Length: 252
View 1: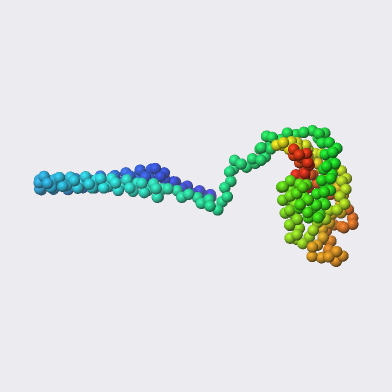
View 2: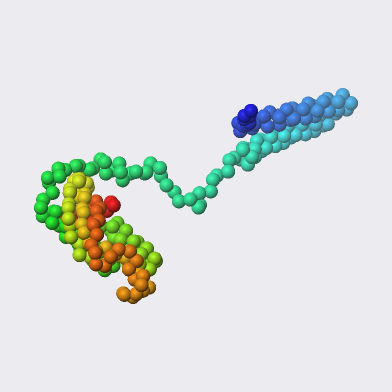
């Protein structure tokens, strides 16, 4: 049998009022006791000076009790019922309203174009970029890559090269020959033109060990130095106002 515990939470307002009422009740009791004492004194010793002194003491006592009740009520709200604030010192702030902001902005500014808008000169530029990027990658030339790709892609290639180095390998892609190319999508966004093309090429694609010399066993880790193999990826090219195409993305 499943059981469920129910926790009833007291309202801070009702709790404060309860404390105030309790305080006032105590004050009333003390007032009545003081008043009774004053009346008894008046019956026994009807001196005017004694009556005045008793009334002054009664008034001072009531005022003191009311001040004490008020102070306890304020203390109750400020100290006892005041919730503790969470500590966000170790958490980086994130505004959920900004999630997918770039996607929403892109959807509002993107305009699809006809595939036929890609000219033969554009296709020739894509083919040359394929060869130049692969050569710069094989040479681990980040300076050359910076001229051929966007900053985001440069960071991607830099991280990939560092990862290969950490594994003591180096990738070579040589003698690249474009076999087929198909324009898949064309669009403009924020005054820039984008083209995604499906590319298939042949090349001598192989990995070598950084800890061994050519000719030693285990120098070629993967692939072949002599036999070409085919590869295919979808490359996205971007052209800004200067008219130069650069590589913007790769999807395998």
